[in-house]
Every structure is written in C-alpha cells, then in structure tokens.
Length: 289
Image (cartoon, rainbow, N blue to C red; front, side, top):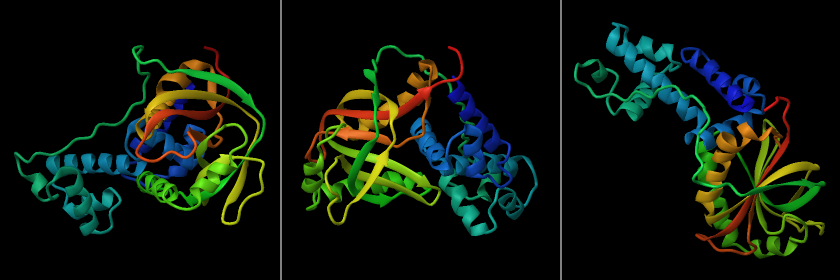
C-alpha cells in the first residue's frame, strides 16, 4: 500500500499550497515517479487531470473566501494565483456557474470540490485476469505524436491520432512489421525526458525501420499482463485505474516506470470491441505484505 501513501503525500503537498505556487515536479518527487507519469497516473485514478483538480480546489477555496470574508475579488484572485481578474472570473464561472461577485449573494448555489484521498477499493465482484511474465529487451517501431504536460489534451489527441492512423496508408505497414512479442498492434507511451515524451502506434519487430517511422527499445523487465474483453477504450482505461487502486497495493510489487503497452488485434477498425491486453512493468516491492 506504499504507492497509495505516496500519492496521498503528493496530494497533501498540493492541498497545503493551494494559495502558493504548486510545482508538478515536486508533487511527482513526493510520489516517487516522473512528472509525466505522476500526471498520467493521477488522471487514471481520479478521472480528472491534475491541473483541473487544482483549479477546482482553488475555486472551491476562493468561493469560501468570498462568502465568509470581506476580501476584494482581486485580492482573492491574486491569492489563488490569478494575476488577471478576467482569467479568475473565467475560471470561477467554469466551476461555479456564477461570477465571483455574485458568489457573495446569500442563496447563490456554488460547487464545493473536496480534497481527493486515494484509498483501497474493496471489491471482489469483478475479476482481474492477469499473469506475470519475464521478458527480455523489446524493440518496437511505428509512428508517434508528442505528448504534453496537459493530460486533458493528451486524452483528446490520442484518439484522434488512432483515427488518423487507422484510416491512413501507414497502418497496414505497421501491422506488417509485427513479428515479435507482444503480438499485435501496440499503443505505447514512452517517456524519454521532461521535454520528450511520445505516444506510439507501433509493432514489436526486428525488421528494418521503414521511412517515416521511429524505433525505440524497452529494457528487460517483469510485466503484469492484464487480459480484457470489451470496448477497447473503456476497458483499457479501467485496467489502468484498477491496477493502481486494486492490484498494485496488495501485490507486493511496485510500478517500474517503464512504457505502458496496450496490445490490440492486428488491423482492427474503430470503434471495436474484442480481446486486448495491457502490459505494465513492475518490480518487487520493498515493503512486507
């Protein structure tokens, strides 16, 4: 359960700095992972992006300030990191549906978003089929798009990327490259550095890299492989969330921070359902369970 403790410690840092600068890098350091993976994991587990969570929490606190104190709207805006009254007004209305000035009126309906706490979800009705596999280094090739620090943008751009690739001329070429394990067409998130992280549509291959494509390698690792059936997007997102909140805390493993791999049947069309897999690299944990 060490992973959830780390996530909650990062949330504690954010909560204690809602009226100060919040460093995503520092939050990630507390959670013991890269900034990119911290934001990604946060989005999977909470259902909203880290930036959206912070905005909601700040606007919740700002509403409390406006209702219980005589602080000027501009002072409240500055306190919660908005130098421009216009940007503060826009953020406030997006959360509460009313202007900051109107929030002072008795009877105004406002929205309070409590602080998130990550905890164990006690279930049992939904099985998670998985197996552990030791794999040597893997070489993959395909086409990619850059990912940004904005997880909301990534969640919009990745489906568009899939749509454009599936409908384009390179998709069949990527499918034809697949001759290694994992067998299929792959969606892979690859973090290289704070300014270089990408989402690939790729295949595991030892073949030469075609023009217009890029290759990358994943080192030898221990993988937990989850199998699922259903609509690809919904099921894959569910697997990642359940991995962090249900499987990992009790497994005796830690997240290894390597690229996560989505495995789909070769040459499918979207939207589609069927059998798919999620490969997540893990390492033996340090705590005793």
